[in-house]
Amino acid sequence: MFQQSGIFIACCCHRLVLLGCDMIKSGEVMKYPLAIVEKLLSVCGHNGAVFYDIGCAFSTTLANSCIAPKVSSLNLRMLVGAFHGHAHNRKCQLEWHPALCSQDWQHGRGRM
Image (cartoon, rainbow, N blue to C red; front, side, top):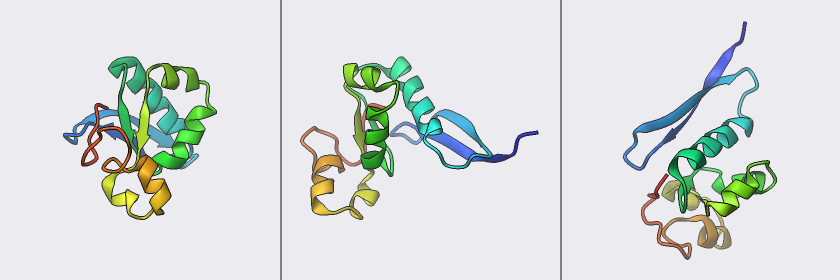
């Protein structure tokens, strides 16, 4: 009936899978990371960080989504992983790269 086109997972900094969902036919759209982030917020609470290879662009999606108030009130921080951060320009790295942004997020690690 449905064609599974992949999976979308969230792992902790120890590389253990926390959540996952089947990507059904529609491919890579923002509904999968939004669903994962919403669940992580309800489980993990305040001052978390999510490392996502497109975290810089995804933050705009989060800000325009129905979970934006929850993201803001729980102080969620989006970051790009250490490897992906080097592909961005310097200005983007200063805001999204864990070793360079103003908060203490080192080596691609956070609470979520």
